[in-house]
Image: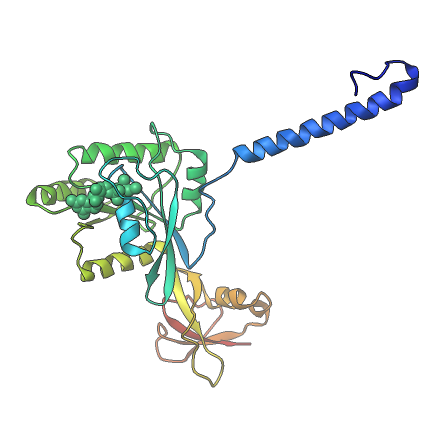
Length: 287
Ligand SMILES: Nc1nc2c(ncn2[C@@H]2O[C@H](COP(=O)(O)OP(=O)(O)O)[C@@H](O)[C@H]2O)c(=O)[nH]1
Ligand SMILES: [Mg+2]
């Protein structure tokens, strides 16, 4: 229309209106385009008590780990780069569920922005390494370098290294060298996910629970038995006051203290709001 209307003083107002319309349409089109571009496959809603990322060298057994501990069905194959988008699964641990996310490998040593964001959001990281690989140590160094380049800090409490495929004395030897080199900085566990026993699987799940840095607290109404069906989830180191504000934001203001069963010196001990709670404590809030 702008092209065909006569350009003179009488149509100036109309021309201006059309130009405005065009610019508006162009803008909204560009917005839509850029929205499409920023689709983030790593933006996985956190469900359950915690979210744990599974990363590691290609072909090390990350997807095997996910399928062993959850009901997810990732593709597992004997060649690298089978996993092309992040896949979540829920791991049952006693009375809670922990979300595990199987990460696809990053390319050329560069962790992509969306993957970085997801690593930052995760409550903990499992690193799976291939204990049968001839380049185990190089692979570990390169992974650590990528993380460092992206300013991701791995602390001992927030990361667990699984050296997988430990099946023969040769891999046992690899594992002990690996532990000598990295044992002080990281928690390391040697496994064979293909031959794992029920007992080892239980220990592994407990390790992952510890990695999540959470505690379970059961609340108890006065004079009644505690509600053991659904624990409140708090972070390690959180207090009676934190529990109160988790239950209801106003409760923290009226809180006087609590009675605690479990970690307290004696059962039902009266404690102050700043008392630090422990996993499986039963708490009766006093207002
Ligand atoms: N020998 C052996 N092979 C394993 C073990 N765990 C996984 N694998 C195999 O290693 C290959 C890669 O596993 P996958 O889970 O797809 O690795 P990902 O690329 O890290 O996700 C598959 O052929 C698995 O069957 C293990 O404990 N021992
Ligand atoms: Mg995979």
